[in-house]
Image (cartoon, rainbow, N blue to C red; front, side, top):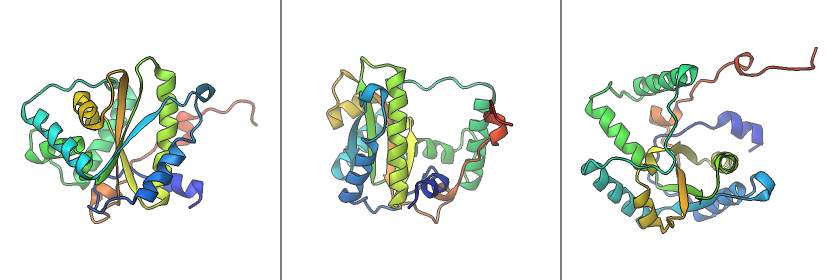
Length: 221
């Protein structure tokens, strides 16, 4: 698959078949992720690739936290969005909830959906990316570049992906199950699996702002 084809075709996939991603495909995805550029070639990213019994233990441990009503304690809390950024997020959520037949606040369907995010949308595989706690936002930018390589390579192999802050709500669980030391900051999780195209949650494409709204040109006629 050509790069532009992958870029234009990729979307966040939120519904997966139970078929695991092949080990050889996962290796190719990780190889691409590790080839991303970084500040001074510092390569700040570290990955835990998850599947099988490890995925089952992780989901069970997170479910226990949710059942107990334990407050999340993310290493990197998400920002409080405002203005157009918040409006874009709300618009995408409304469209997703409509197409996935999820009701509004307070409904069981919405509660189930929110819990499914912590389970990587029941994807058979996932990655969790983390970095040394001594690093700052510039290294997180590098991690974003690495994740884009991973997601585009996944799409090349017919594997869907979705980045999820909800998957890292309880970093203590991730550290225990995945052996991640306290000296690391857990950044984000990414669900990986073959898309279940019978579900709107796998086919929905979020809208993008027109170029003229976000790009200015200087020195051109």
